[in-house]
Structure formats: structure tokens, C-alpha cells
Length: 258
Image 1 (cartoon, rainbow, N blue to C red):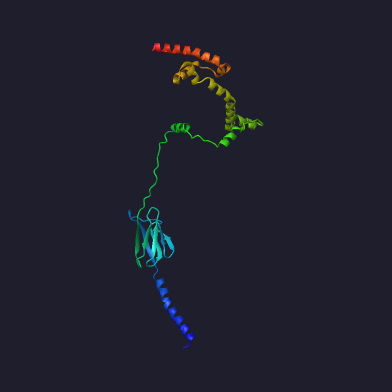
Image 2 (cartoon, rainbow, N blue to C red):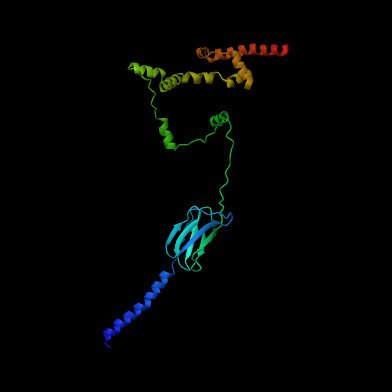
């Protein structure tokens, strides 16, 4: 027998020996029918993910928790679902014509503590917003120095160029807001002067009244803004003291009548 013939016979023998092994491996694969169920509630787990780790493929269970997947003995299935603990299921052997039920343990998630406060009525909410104390915002010293020297643009009063613009400037909400702002800006100096010359602090220093008594006395005086601005401080304070005498007499008379 020649050497070449011996080599060919050896190759044929090895091939015949390996082929049954491949056939045996393919024959060991089978179609597993399973259902994922909650261990606590005994209800189906919908849309669970089943992954065959060894074969690198997977499926998703339907709404009843049922699934079908190709497996072989000793394969490992990774099963996961939202609201349940992760679970590994090992294939014990060839399972045919039967439904395998796999139970998952329910998982409970801890959420951080939250505080719930009563919002109240709209008036209460409005009061809280108006009286909310905001933290002071401090700019960088260099920026504050720049802001002091910045002149903010003045709001220009609209000019009338057509009948349409006239109607707009008279009745539009934006135009009314601009006019109101311009008027307040023009009168701001007078308002500041009034607050500085005639206030509860001045009344307390001259008469000793404070709180509600000072407010009642200021209502009694009933000074007009134009009058306060037209006289100097000496005459203003003299008028306050003069009216204070009348206020005390009126108060004493009302107490006697009671």
C-alpha cells in the first residue's frame, strides 16, 4: 500500500469520526417553552427579557409571560424584568412537550423622603411670594464698579406718526405701561422728598407717637403733597406741632365722652 493511499484513508477515517459529533451537538438543541411568573402574586410577568448566555441570543416574553427559545442542556438563561429581582435559570436537560414555569421575586424600590407643604389659597400664595426673602446677590467688585458708571437707556415716549399709531399709543397695554413708567420716573424725586420730610420717624421725634397712633395722627393732619413741597422744614414741623395740640384735645374729649 502506497504512502499516498494511507494518507487518504486516514483523512477519510478522521472525517467519519468527527461528523457524528457535530450531528450530536445539533441534535441536543431543543425549543424550550416557558412562562415567567411572579413568585409573590402568582401572576404572569409581561415583557420579561430572557437571554441565553451560552448561545448569545434572547427573546422577550409576551403579555402573558410566555416565551420560546432555543436551548441545550447546561445552558444558562438570564431573566430580568422591571419590578423583579434578576434571576438565572439553568437548563437541567432536554425538556420536551411541557411548559416550564420560572418564578421571579418581586423587587421593592426605596425612594428618597419628600416633604409636602400646603399651598393654600391664591391670596395666601400671593402673600408668600410678595413677602419672600430672597438672598442678596453680590457681584464681583470690578463688575459693581462698572455698573455704577453705566447709564441705563431711558424709555422714550412714543411719537404719533399716523392715526393708527395714535390709537395704539392711547389704548394699547404696552403704551399705557410706558406712559405710567414715564410718569412715575418724573415724580420719583418728589416722592423721595415727601418720604424723607414727612414720615412716621419724623412724627415720633416731634410728638412721641408711634405705630397706629402715628398713622392716625398723620390721617388727622391730612397734609397734601403739594403743601408739604411748598414749605420749608421749619414751617412744616411748626404746623405738625400745632395740629398735634388739636389732635390731643380731640383725643381727650373723646375719652371723656366715653
